[in-house]
Length: 62
Image (cartoon, rainbow, N blue to C red; front, side, top):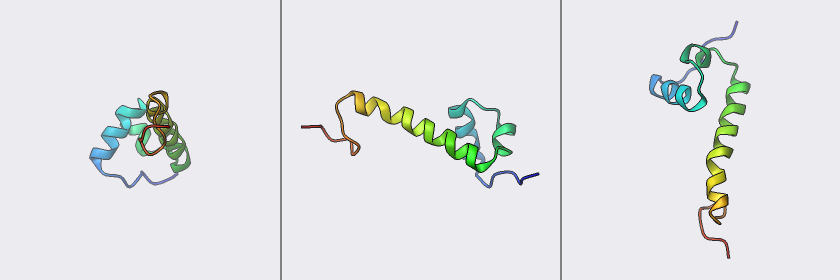
């Protein structure tokens, strides 16, 4: 069995809310799955910038 993730309580609460996963599940989630979910979350939060005509740096596209 793997060790619980070594993250702060504040980070665990925020990730739990953002990922819609109970804290107990989050703390025992394998790191590679957590990283995948965080990447999906980052891609989802980056998509509004793309739809507004901004590039990756948040600057207007020519």
